[in-house]
Each structure stands twice: as C-alpha cells, then as structure tokens.
Length: 361
Image (cartoon, rainbow, N blue to C red; front, side, top):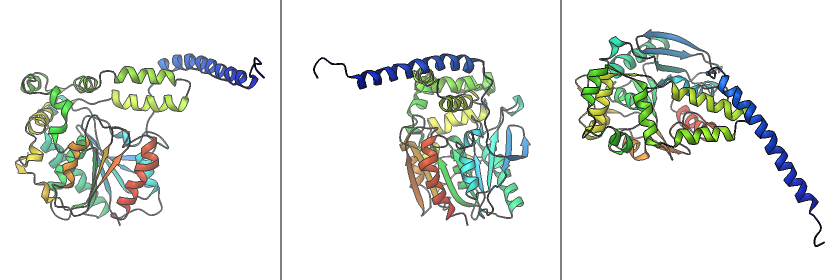
C-alpha cells in the first residue's frame, strides 16, 4: 500500500548498520592488538637441519605419508628471501600439501651473508651450494636423480644447475615465476639502468647489499601498494583469518635478506644488462651455460598478474631447452600467490601434484 513503510527493508538496513557497528568496534580493538602483537609465527611441518655453512641452510622435511615417491624434490629459495614462504601455516603450506601426497622434500634456504661472504657469486650458489645439497641427497637416498625446483631467482639458479649438472642427475625441473629473458624485467631494468646506476661503486662501497635497497626497488615498482595493503588490512581488521594471513606475508616480505655484493653485481651486469642467459653468453664459474643441455621434463608456473616476473620473462624456458616434455601453467594472482594463498591451495598445487607425481616414481 502506497505510503506504508517497508518493514522488511527497514529491518534489513538495521541489520546492516548493526553488523557494521560491530565490525567497527572489533576493528578498533583488533587494531590495538595488531600493533602490540609479536611477530606472527610461521611453519607447519617438521624439518631437520642437515647442513649449516655460512649463508647456506639445508633442510630435509620429515615425511608424513606411508609411501614416498622415489625421486626426491629439492626446492631452492631465492637468496634474497627466506624459504618459509613454502610452509607458512597449516592449510597454507605448499610443503604440507606435497608431503601428504608422498614427496620427499629438501629445502635449500639462506641466512644473511656474513661480511666475509661478500665475494660469493652465482658460481658459488650453483656449483657449490646447490651441488653440495644434490650430492648429500644422493648419498642419503641412494638416488642420483632429483627434481630440482626454484622460486623466482631461486628458479634461475635451479635452471643454471640443471644445465650444468650433466646427464642422469635431473629427473624434473619445476620452476615458479622464473626469469630467463631479463629484457622483460622492465621495472627492474629501469631501476638499474646503466645510464644512472653505478653498480660497481655501490658494491665496492658496501660489500654486502642491504635488504632496504631491494625493498625500495619493489616499492618503486608499485608505489601505492603498501598504502593500499594497509587500507585493505584496516577494512578487514575484524577478520582474524585475514589478519593472520596478512601478518605472515608481511613478515616474509619484511625479512628480505641482504645479498653478497659479487652476486648482486653479476645479476645486474650479466642478466639485467647483458641478458646473457637468453643470448647464450652466460658463464658460471668459467663454464658455458647451454640451456639445450636440459633434457628433463619441465613444468613452468607463471602468474597472470605478476608485476615482478612477467610471463614473457619466463616463457623462453619452454623452447630453449632440449626437453621434449614441457608444460606451462598460467595461475591466477600475482608473484607470491603461486607458492602461497587460497587459489594455489585449491587449483595450482593439485595440478603440480598431478604433473610431478607420474614423473617421480
């Protein structure tokens, strides 16, 4: 009847106002709790430290499945980041997911390099650290073959090792957002343009490159990202699950590691400036890197909205090697969501398991 109030609509508006008021109260209380809380704990699965040598920390995760695949999996973390991104928490852990499906997982992780490690270069990461871990795995398991995997620059190091390891060592190559063509690392190339960036002066002056330099580079790539993230956090402060997830990712990002100056110089000169890996001019420890020497099956995972490693930067891995078994998975989300996050749990990780399982027996 005209002119009569809609009691259902009025009640609905009242419910919404009440819910928003409750959330506002929770948001303020949770905001105070957030500011005073200690660092968010991370890690879901048990592991054992096998080797601790300088900046290198090498772990084996304890199997949880009754049957374990024959081929072990070695994950290489980028030297600028901690490896717990693969094992954040129950339900958000790539390692938890894979361990329950029977994979034998090893992690090559990093600690801040000491002052006397400023001269560590790509050759040390590939021909020393990764090689030592691979030998340890072979001795411990009796298997000469392994699946080597890496995330971002950890993936690039894994690719370099796979190209130099020789026949019979690499069973599979699994890469997460791994740059090969550094011409398409557009924002990093702009940040480190040789016209204004004197990498030699920087490295000679500092020795060890502080993490603030890399964090600043990421902020320059997306200057509003940090502010937008804080606004999104505040809007969801009443949601305990959202806040917990935010704090885990925020801790990981804040714990970016310093890098040895020699390694940093090589990344800038050989990869960003010379694009030596794509152009076939890459040398590691005096050895020429020939990507066609990689004949193992390859799975390359790229993110649809990756502002760090564009799909074009990772794509050449699929056609520059000697492998006859190459596949790419285009995942929803951004650079970090391929190794953690709800979308990875539901869609990406099962696809990885399906691909890798049949090649790990």
